[in-house]
Image (cartoon, rainbow, N blue to C red; front, top):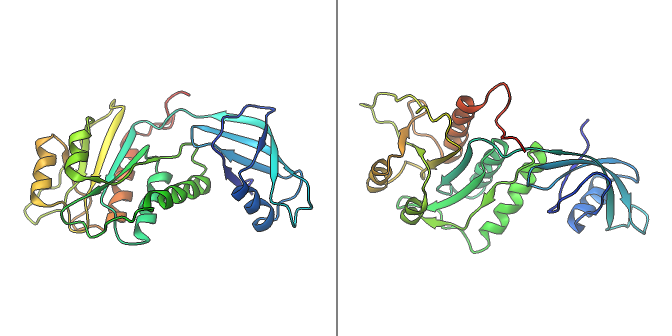
Length: 251
């Protein structure tokens, strides 16, 4: 069994002593019931993964709320290639959690929630903070050493205007459409993936994407949910980019 994983916003090197954040310490000691000397894994979301030995601070483990660890080994990973920016219209409720988890597990570098004309969800004021917690949990679960950057929600037009990288968008297939092959974007260091709300982008949004040379792409013959389209398009990109050497740049 792999050692349990914990997230900490810190740089670390072999031999360092690191204090765990209180929420992670409580999870380690009271939920997982780890003990002094157990091996744990640390992720910092910036490309580093470390193996460490747990040390309980002060009180007995059953009452302790503080823990530290000594770093044994450190692995450093280059950034995922291509660096994918996911522009996505937030779906309802917990379906957004599915989007965020999939984006993390499949290696997205950035996530930009976009507000579209057909969008049915207006994110709450503290949505970004809650989304960040979901990303951290997904990074720990998947052992991804890179934590995606989550942006504040943006209006579709503003997001498209600010985007300066090539991309593809999830298009809703029409009966007369001929399936288009995924564009050959090998060698592109950055890529944007655009996924609209349920039912797709509004006509003017679809046209605006095409006018900016964002390439339409369909998966299958049916209309996909936002969370399904996220998984399908990210998987399509990885299938075309990943080599036998993996899809990370050199650290």
